[in-house]
Length: 71
Image (cartoon, rainbow, N blue to C red):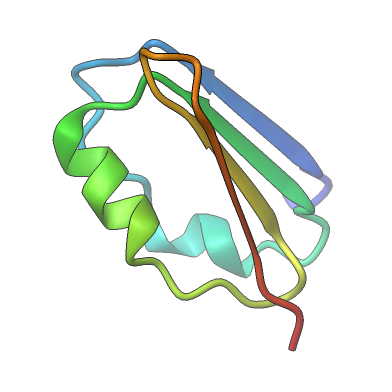
């Protein structure tokens, strides 16, 4: 999985967390999550990103939140 550069998660209401190793993948540049569970949304909103990964999260009201930190 070291070549994974984009991950799209769509309407996985039972998914409450993502593995911490995901954020360490050197090629990963974008993660997009649509309609996450409340728990996953909370985790993603408080996540400290590094490696220039862009995180886009869209809720069930079609609001898009983007998070990107470059270190």
